[in-house]
Length: 432
Image (cartoon, rainbow, N blue to C red; front, side, top):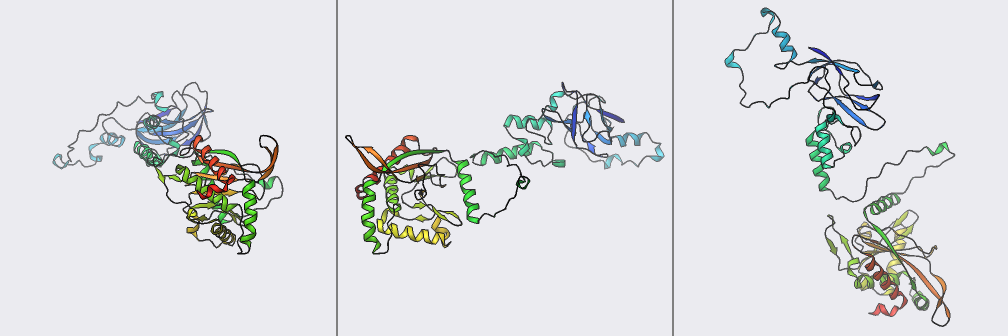
């Protein structure tokens, strides 16, 4: 029996646009199989077939505007007790019917078939609740699957369907939810950036990034998304330290050792890490355990013509200022010549990054994951500081500690930064 399937009531909508046809002539449909997808100015929805059968003629096309009662397609409807071909065969004369199998050769069905819902009347509208507008975008999924996805909080637009023509079935939703639960939920999804042809606005030049710049960008972007960054600012009076450094610089120059401020910063970092060991740690993969480190490897950010690299000074607690000065100079030289080995940039506990040679009064450095904190150093400047009676010129060094708020709270960050500053303010603390 051939019937015409019409668009049922879709609510208070005058016209909806056809955005996808999901069937073709000759396709076999089950009851509730999707026929087409419609879109209004508010949502998208799929229209299911109210009956089972074989598609005859599709009466609409993509782009058509439809209203309630418009014809969608013709359907060769299956008989309740058998398909249409069987009904037609039984109506033929006996000499034209195909031979019947003897009763004893008929297969037996040991399982009782599940009860079927009574078929809807030809052209009748299915329950409107079964094709509510999809809140997750246009996807190939039936009403039951959509209801299940809403209950589980699954975004169907992210689910890959395994059914016919990519249709999403319940097993796909279950597998998606299971996989999502097994993955760490860190960061937020980022919408793809729009593609822009900048040549429309003027002359341009395309410059290829170096591999180091690409990797650094990926690493910092990932860390920024995953880690809740907070920055603690403080200042250190390094007037006395700078006087001492200049005096020692002359002695070490005879041994071809250049004593910069960096070895003192490394020593201050080690002292602060020992005083506040929680900062010398990393979160494990599940984010539920803290890995406490009992070694002191300090990472130092080095600017090179090819991008930023971060070599590691190992066992900094066991080295003197002169040894640290020599090692830092060697690492920086080889970094700029692209001669560092891969293992020399791994295993750091805490990073120092300095912009003091350029300028600035403070900045918010991005944490070098899997570390949980990084100290930014800005340019020292002479300021008038009141000593209780008069104002004295003092050399003040700005400090910026970015830290992972999952591991370090504000109190600990302030204590750590103050300790760091106090070691620089009185170098005798390095002997303790």
